Image (cartoon, rainbow, N blue to C red):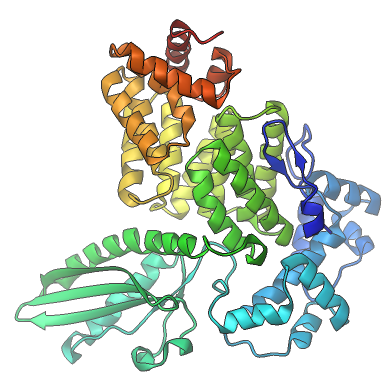
Length: 531
C-alpha cells in the first residue's frame, strides 16, 4: 500500500511537478484492458469481502500473473491493494452518515474486516486518523456530505404559503427538486421540517421558500442556507400573476438552476481551504485542487497535483480524482512547463482512460478528460466528451468554456466567443474566469482585432497574475497595435517564466488554427525570441 511515508518519496520530473508512486507508468497503449475493467467491477460488487486473486483472474479470463501485470501497468498497484482501499472507503462513508450509530467493529465486519485491531491499523494508515475520529467529526458536522463525489445534499424544505397557494407551493418544490437533481442529492423533509432542530435534517444545504398572495399577484421568494456554517448563500424573489403562475415558475427554475449549484460549489471549495490535507477525504481534496487547476498557472498545478496524488491514494475508485490528475498533467503541457512532454502526454491519456472506466458519465469527469484529449490533439474525442458533459449538465460553465476552446481550435472564433460568454454568465465568480477571459481574447486575436484582444488578455492577467502563458499572445497583440515597449515588457515576463523558451516551444503548446499559431510565432520572432 502507498502510505504517507511513501508519499514523501515522490519522484520529481524536471519541471518540478510530482508524480505519485501509486500512479501507473505511462505506456504506449493508453486504453484500459478488459480484464482490468472486469476486475474493478467485480471488486466494487464485493465490498463485503476480500476477493482472492485466483477468483478475480478466473472472472477476467486471464492468468493471475497476467492480471497482476495489467493492474501494475494501468492502475499502479495490485488488485488486492485496490480492493482493500475500496472496502476501507466503504467503511468511511458509512461512518460519515450522520445517523449511522452502528458499532464501528460491526460496520467493519460488514466490509470484510473480521479483525478489529488489523482494521484499525489499515484505516489509520490510509486516512491519517482513527475510525472513531471520523465518526466524531461527522457528529460535529465537520465531515463532508455523506455521498462521495460532486453531489452535495440539498434539503428542499416545505415552502410557507397560505392554504389557497399550497398546491402551487408543492408544484414549485417538486419542479425545483427535478431541476436540481442532476447536480445534487435532493432531500424532501416532512411538513414539520421547518420547525425541527437543524441537526435533525440530514443535509448541509437547505432551500427555503415562501409564497405570498397580494390581490391578483403572487410573490415567490427563495433562500439557500448553509445550515452548518449558519450562512445565507443566495436568495431571490419573483412576482407573477396568480392567474398564470406557470410562466413565473419557469423563470424561478431558470434562476435557481443557474445560481444554486454554483453557490454550493463555491461554498464547498471555500470550506476546505483551511483544512489540513492529511485530514481531507478524496472529495475534499478534489475541491481544494479544482480552483488551483482552473486558474491555469504552473505553480498552482503543481500544488494541485500533490493534492490529487493524495486523493487517488486514499480512494483509487474515485473517477473525479483520477480525471483531475489527468487534467493537471495536461495543464503542465499546455503551459510549457514539461521537461518530458511525451511522457506527460502518455501519463495524462492513461489517467483519462482510467477515469472513463471508473466514472463514464459524470459531467465534471467528462469535461476534465476533454482537456487531456484537446492537449493530445485528439479533438474529435475531446468534442465527444464535451458534448456528453453538456448533455448531462447543460449549465456547467466549465464545459461551455471547453466547448469554446474546441471551437477556437477549429477556427470558429465567433462561436468560441459565444461559448466563453455563456460560461461567464453561468458562473461569473468561477475560479476559471481567467481562462474565459483569455478565450474571448483568443477569439478577438483570431479575427484580427488586436486592440480588443490585448484588453481582454490584460483582464485575464489581472484576474490571475500567475497565468504567465497569456504573454505569448499578449506580446504579439501589443506589437500589432503599435505599442513596442509594452510588447517587449510582455515578452520579458514570458522569458522570466522560462529563460530558455523559444518560438517552437510556444507554438508546440498552442492548440489553435495554423494561421493563428503562425501569427504568434512570427510576431515573437520579430520581437527577438529565438526560433
